[in-house]
Length: 192
Image 1: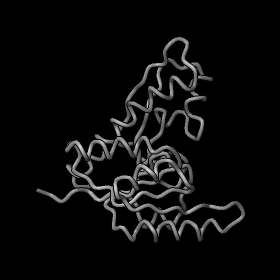
Image 2 (image 1 turned 135 degrees about the vertical axis):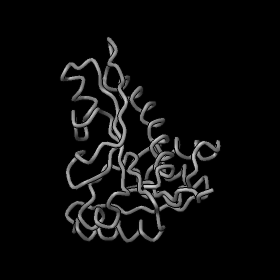
Image 3 (image 1 turned 120 degrees about the vertical axis):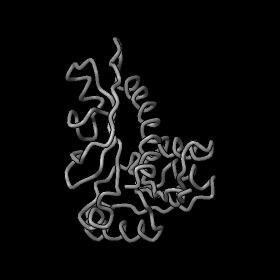
């Protein structure tokens, strides 16, 4: 039986995607180990990790500081945990060349839209403003662009009459959590 997949998860907020991974691991539905959780600020998701005995780190990107130096430090910090896979799970910072070079092909992200449609930080709002009847979520490999990397998996979520940004985003998040667990599970099974 192969060793469990070593994952570092990067977050910026509540950590609900992280929780989905932790729950799947605890239930025996995912052969993975979250070896560290990092954030760009103090975040609720760090408490979720600490409560499970998972090491955490915070590496803020302070406005006006050297972004390349931050990127190199992030790469060094994550590399110290020897991950097989790095997961951006609501991490609201763009990484740079040093990080991407270190984790090329092993860094994935989630996005609450069917890429290439509605990239960026306001995907759900943008989808509603465009009047689409279908949107969804995407798991993709991170590259140097903004939400432009190769698509690994997608799933459609219907826009319902009366949806606002919060209600639609909540339904997308439910699908996104399940899809992320499936992708991480397949990652080891496909021996990427």
